[in-house]
Length: 53
Image 1 (cartoon, rainbow, N blue to C red):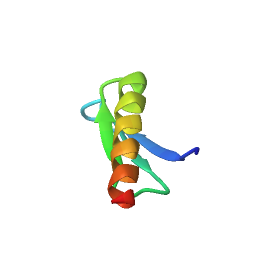
Image 2: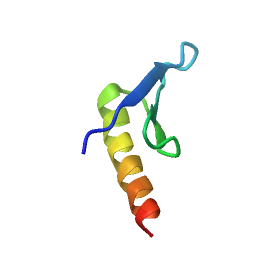
Image 3: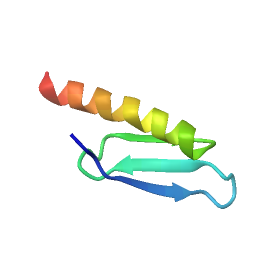
Image 4: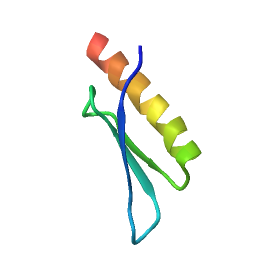
């Protein structure tokens, strides 16, 4: 399944913050876009797992 992610960059810290549109509880951050995407993948997997329980 594919998920949409809203990404914002904090202008003060330069940190990227992401939130999944379909799973609002799946949120994460990263110093780079690659780090954010890796963290978001894990956050989405955990959110889906929690929904299945």
